[in-house]
Length: 202
Image (cartoon, helix red, strand yellow):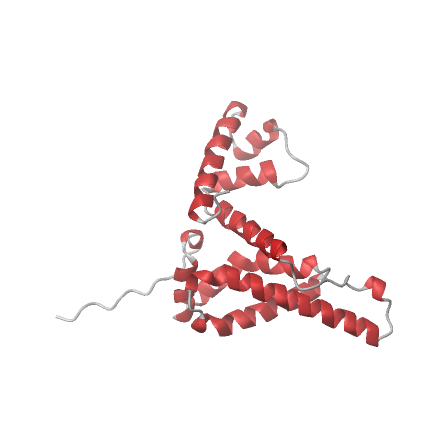
């Protein structure tokens, strides 16, 4: 009796947060378009952060993003370690943003523009900047793996500006005011555990 064919893994909406990079890359290499979308969604903020750091406009930031995506698409089959996507993207996005900056200043010089209004010159990104971007990405991934209520709680308590008082947080989440602190501690504990699993333990 012939064995049944292996069922192809699919990236289901809302499920990819728990998928490793290796799993997403394997699905991409099998032609799973949804896996490609979810992989880019996971790392888009990381990629955007580099051209923004160099002062790129939204349009130029989008151009840098597209260039990085093209490189990623071409490089996926050749990645020796499919779990190294994050580090690879940090390197490529940093270089693409750096080259965008050089092109921008060169264009301003040729057109006789005021270089003071162009992006400030910056050498190739320092190691500490790359490390900071990687830590920020791990934080984003860790928050993305939390249950929905924890994700929303972390967002409103630590990212929304101005910070909301506990009464408004409780109302927005449908909680009693007295339970916000308890749930906050539980969510932070889950977040800490996720940091450890993702390699950000300090």
